[in-house]
Length: 188
Length: 330
Image 1 (cartoon, rainbow over the protein chains, first blue to last red):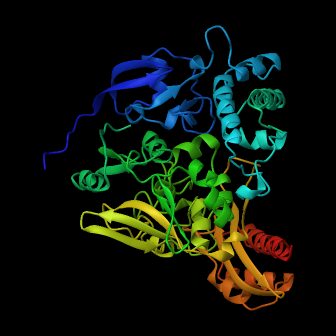
Image 2 (cartoon, rainbow over the protein chains, first blue to last red):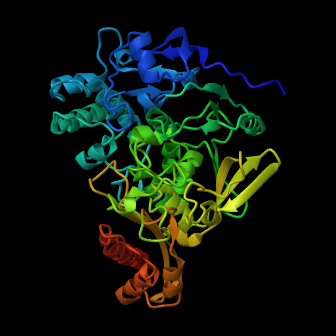
């Protein structure tokens, strides 16, 4: 076979918030650094840069993930949604609106990650995913109500050093309830 | 971070060939452990072979009533799958007990099995570590080891395997399948991890260059009544200081069948066979459960600062078996 290529950078096209961004990346570049430093999408925040704080949470193919442990080159071809891509024009995403209405933050640094994570938490719950605090995970037991305990567990990958958790939980619950009302489902 | 080449593999044979062409190459799955270790310099691959796009992302029933789980299935999808939750609820619980929702959506089954220990000396390149630099020493034995091994360790390494998923897989007799340049192979999970001995840097019995392609769970009706319980230093999003995966079948007050495995106590998920022997055929009561835990933990060799784990594991085993016996009686 041909000798293996040794290049340490690649031309990739990142799909972010519905736009295509062609760029050349050093393979060491994380998706987080590509978003912030190359695409000027600075809504996604760098906290710990080691997968422990959740500040860099984005959606990849609709699933929440931490951008600091995702190599940009490995994200080629996948649909990435950042906090900048959640609103529809001037209309905020219901989760964003709930965080505003219920004061789900203090300094705001963890907020983009909290919001992206919450958007996915609500979808995971609507899809029937159990959590570590779900008493009976068997499918016959049905979807657990999205109680404060469930929200706290499901959001545990997003740390808030200001400790705004009380209002964050309320905001997630309100947005989940609004989604359920829209779709005829049940959040609680 | 060292510079590296990157290639995306599209089929299993191609992935194995790409890795085989470069002795300093590593497979990249979700990257939640490998990328982190590359940032700190613990891992310094010259090439990454990305296996996440391989067609190994299915969970399928086997003809005999078990389940076949592909290596690139994410932890998130594994824990959400109805057949996993129905047939092996402790496996779903174990996966849900690990990491965060974000990390579970990235991490893969194959990568979970091959993740490295979180021992603070292993992850700090300024420290000696026999696992990272063979022969350099193990500072944990005299140092910080409150969350280190009490079973199966050696004077060369006392690190624990961090997986929750692996504990449930060990309890349910999972078989790991892999691909090599010479063809496919398989290993019972019980034989995947090598004894620590004086070679803690040699972690698995996989042939060099092998790619894990999946995990097969044999049929286990006993697993329908099963549970995973994890103890950690905060309520969520932390590694275990001790965990138990157990399944119990009680008939007429007697233990008919049982599966038991312990986590965060050894360099591998610890199948508790001595405890299982003490349980089978015995009355399903607190006395039996305690005696079974003691039978397993008789081999424990705690260090000065992790002796609490012996008591913790004894209580955990008794509590989980008691809950399962009550569930079985309902």
